Image (tube, rainbow, N blue to C red; front, side, top):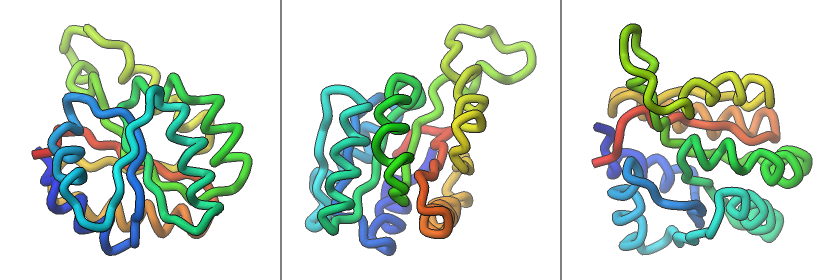
Length: 164
């Protein structure tokens, strides 16, 4: 498990003002904690692609948004990501739940193909990414913010485990 408190502390350090996305099983605890947060506003979207357009607009307006979605939603949102945050050069950090990661282990039954396509898609779209497996990896969030600022492009942190 990954501690929602550690993730939120990282978001606070980086001045995140808004979290946008669609909750899923792996991120539900993080969303619940964010809804109670005093300074970070949560904006739920009907589709993941909508989160990129809204986040891009918020950024242009002076806010510091973050997109929180699952990898299946990331795959759905490709054109929205490309047409907004990527083409506009927005240093947007994404926290992306890694649905199906466990099915990638040798010998594991391949029940969900989302994981199979996820990292190759990130690479094909030139999205820098790192992975958080445990709380010990929470520095990956700081690294993603630094990379996004350095490149002026979206960067992802893959949440391999559920938040608690």
